[in-house]
Image (cartoon, rainbow over all chains, first blue to last red; front, side, top):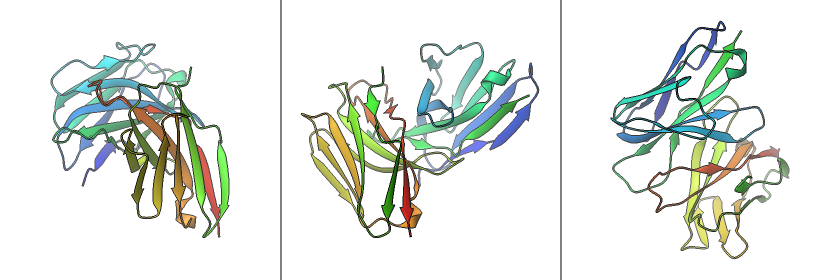
Amino acid sequence: GAVVSQHPSWVICKSGTSVKIECRSLDFQATTMFWYRQFPKQSLMLMATSNEGSKATYEQGVEKDKFLINHASLTLSTLTVTSAHPEDSSFYICSARDGRTTNLEQYFGPGTRLTVT
Amino acid sequence: DQQVKQNSPSLSVQEGRISILNCDYTNSMFDYFLWYKKYPAEGPTFLISISSIKDKNEDGRFTVFLNKSAKHLSLHIVPSQPGDSAVYFCAASLSGAGSYQLTFGKGTKLSVIP
């Protein structure tokens, strides 16, 4: 159980275009989903927290107009990188919490490698 | 300022021996700690967790020890296997905060030598 999928697993896009990344909880209801970014040899940096049906909460320094997050259902959250630039190239990972429990464990997707040319 | 620190970026251990991965934290309000394992180009996989009301939690070959006074926790893997080679992240959380956010360390790359 507790499987999270992410799509696509990798994407290459041109500078100025937008890219959408999907995160799905496959066998549980994810009331809370998280989006992280990881640079090489660095930790997972939390970008934003999204709760189903409400606006995402962004961490300091993360532009909410650039990284659009939508959590429209209990099994799906999307991250759209708008007007992507080469500095947005990174590994983006989502995670989800099982809303039926009080556990703090987050279950992670496999990640999306974004390359902006 | 990093609130969760993993000061050893890498560790090499012989197969069959014990692997000890360390983690220190600075925020005394953290009361729930987790270890994740991550292979390259994959998302982290949850391994084991511990609440601050305990000082030890064991699950098979994995044991996590918590020393609250020293703000230190460690993950022991016994016996180490080649398949354990991965990056291990320590994470901490405030269980009463309601945000369910995790603060991660930078990770320690474990290499288990056959």
